[in-house]
Amino acid sequence: MVERVKEGDVTRSHQIGVLCWLCIAFTFFSLDEAAEIHENLGGLSDSLLPGGTRENTVFAKTGIWMFVLFIPAAAFGLGFISFLRSYAAPRAYRTTILAGVLVFLGSALGVEILANWARQGAAEVLQVTCEEVGEMIGSSIILWATFDLLRLKLQVSGWPRILGPR
Image (cartoon, rainbow, N blue to C red; front, side, top):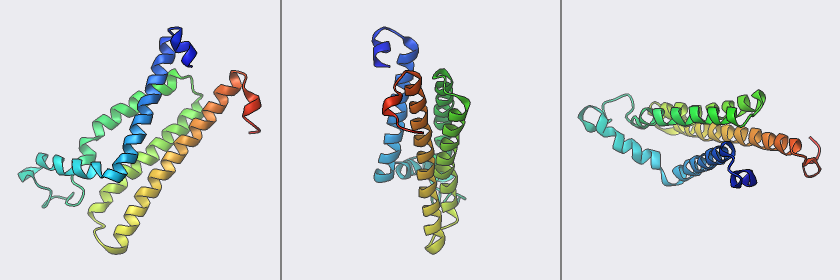
C-alpha cells in the first residue's frame, strides 16, 4: 500500500489515513481505561445538566458523557463504514467488523449506563465485569475480522506462502 501512496494513489492514501485514525481511536480507548478520561468528561458534561450537577438525575453515577459523545462516535462509525466499502472489503468482513464495533460500543456505552442502578456490591461488580468483557469481546471480533481481511488481501496479491493453512 505504501508504494501505491508514493505513486499518488489517492484512494490508497485515504485508506491508510483511515486506518491510522482507527489505530488512534483504539489507542485512546486503551488510554481512557487507564486515565479515566470518560469519567473526567462526565464531570465536565455535568455543566449541561440542570443546576450543573448530576445528583438528582437518573445518571447520578455516570453523568451524561455517553450522550455528549454519541454524535462524534456516530460520525466516526459512519466514516468507518464508508472506509470499509472503499477498501472493497467483502460483505462478510464488513458485517463482522461492524458487529464487533456494535458489541464494543454497546458495552462501553450501553452497559455503562447500568452503573447508575448497580451502585454497590455484587451488582456493581457484575456491571463492571460485563462492560469490560463486552469491550474486549468487541475488540477481539474487530481484530479477528481485520486479520482475516488482511489474509484475504495478501492472498489476492500473491502472498499465500506466508499465510499458512486457513
